[in-house]
Length: 157
Image (cartoon, rainbow, N blue to C red; front, side, top):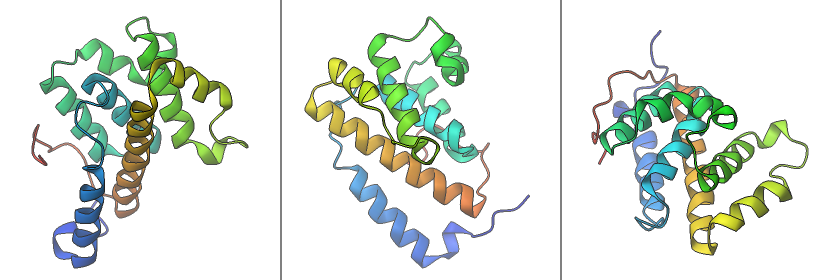
């Protein structure tokens, strides 16, 4: 299977990704715990079937000290005892925010209230922006059929 579009030869894609990366810098570093960010990025990417992002975010998470046990259980986080209550709230919000089309009402009030119990307004904003950003990256990669597997930790900065 080959990619449909070569990001390196498309000025439009390069410009779009440059602006997307710039928008991502609006999320202040340290607002959310790095482990939570990595779990959310990985889970949304799993749901969307984005091999590029699953590859990237699991490798970056491992480099940041995440355990293989937790990374292997992200897809089944509801039935795993290795995640904290705040992480579970973030994963639920990420799942519902990723599966908007699957749920008639989008993100439930219950999921939002649970996240709000664990995160302040700035952290919630960072979480929402992280979920929106990864879903955009996932869609770019899946539509263009970019392939995962060769990412080196820290490759994209």
